[in-house]
Image 1 (cartoon, helix red, strand yellow):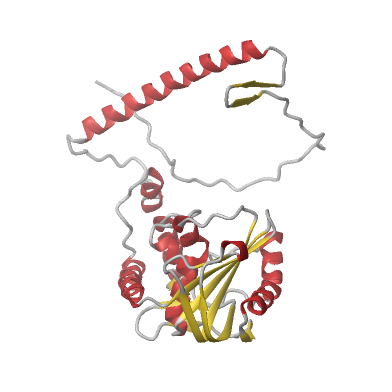
Image 2 (cartoon, rainbow, N blue to C red):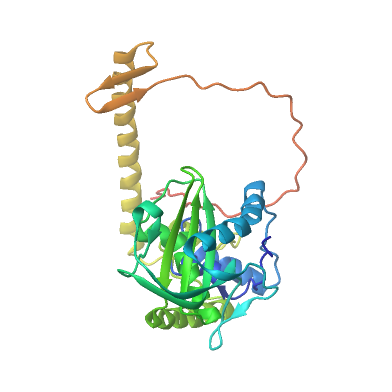
Length: 316
């Protein structure tokens, strides 16, 4: 049974390395940094697990043991009671599993779900790391997908636990497939991790956010507005604001054009629910809403949050 999160929330950990590198799917590096800064300041950033997460933790041990049996690994460990810390710089991790291999050479075999993303083959011997993931998605072996789905986490765990190999085991519930992604330790990653960890910890300590690349990044960096404060912008902002207005107009125009084109297709379909033409399939069906009981909305305390977009108007 999974032991829960053993690592701190105010340092770089294996589970957030993908986010910190800007390769996360669900969280930007700015959002991740903000969470770590909140934790440094004593705020609880953890949340209760939903049912899917709890079931995933429950099933992990069985999947790991099954996978190790299929691979031929021995001395499987799935409970540790401690976190693992890198000996030289601020990175921590917790582990799903460890196991021993005896001079096995792993070669890719698509039919068996065996992959070696960074090598033609992987030699595994002695103790290695097992990272387990469950997903409802269909198998996708692209590097981008693997990075945030556990690959960078696994590579970080190998460094923290000081082993020479690891395997990311992914159970794809959608197709009921078990895939294995083998990794042989690459010391160049350790150098990359060192640079990331030291910069990340300095940013947490000094609360130094990244220069915004998106409006959401800017909102995370400046999430409180000072009432009635007015700043004089650099004249270069005039061109930027004009571009924003021009883009808004183009979006409105394209939205109108899209609406007109959809109307033409709808008129061709009439009351038909579906239509086909060439390689296209069109669905214009009904949305069914279930009956719902009357709900009383509970009272909420007043609060304020900063808008996530700016409003522009010309005053001259």
